[in-house]
Length: 290
Ligand SMILES: Nc1ncnc2c1ncn2[C@@H]1O[C@H](COP(=O)(O)OP(=O)(O)OP(=O)(O)O)[C@@H](O)[C@H]1O
Ligand SMILES: [Mg+2]
Image 1 (tube, rainbow, N blue to C red):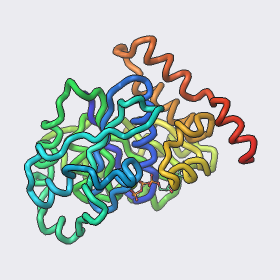
Image 2: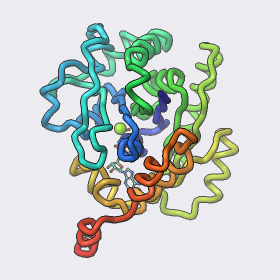
Image 3: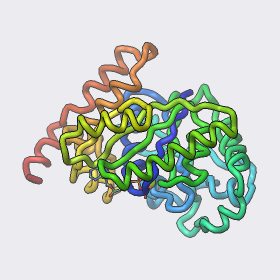
């Protein structure tokens, strides 16, 4: 089991869209994959994935973090979709639409990173490593414990940024906070690298600049793409609905470049290669859409 946190210094960079797309594609390729919605304040991924079936959930991460319920109450919930063939699951951040976590209550409860990480580690330990091949943690943008703690508790982390100076500045804060926390906690998490999202400019110079500045690999650059917004608004998975769009193609490149390993069989690779071939339905849809 590999755990990967998706983090960013600034909110709204595309963490949830990217988490759900990469994990859906891995599930499509045949790997049992889990996404953990650690954004305890906005629950983007939980709403996105479970929508109206949310009220049937037995327990949530908020129950564990804020109510101190036993971690056994939370079981991975399947995200129904033909594309992911029953391989994609979520640990939701809330278990009903009325549940919410006040940031102030969270900050009062978790006054140090070690306490927060202890709970994250207990949750991760409770996931059977034989059950899931990949576990993604979607976090809240910013430099609070949900980003730093999950980066430190995962095997790898990916930083998502937009291609502008405010995002880099916030990225600097986040990366400096992680380096500081690593020193204090005496651990070192592996940097899978950074993804530039919503890009509209030639990106080579920016990629090189950030590679140097942040001292980590460049994982991919995703263009600004209206499909990403459209399907996100409709709670549908972009790569399933529009496999040929720019967003889906770059997610595909990222999975091929970063996730394919010796463990992948020919069948897994074939599924990956076929995933970006637009189907007949999607081609007809695109013809009319344009
Ligand atoms: N490549 C892209 N091109 C255009 N829009 C995008 C792209 N990626 C994501 N978006 C849009 O940006 C918005 C924010 O995306 P998303 O919710 O995934 O970001 P986030 O980082 O998870 O945000 P938050 O910090 O609020 O959790 C959404 O409307 C989404 O559709
Ligand atoms: Mg989000």
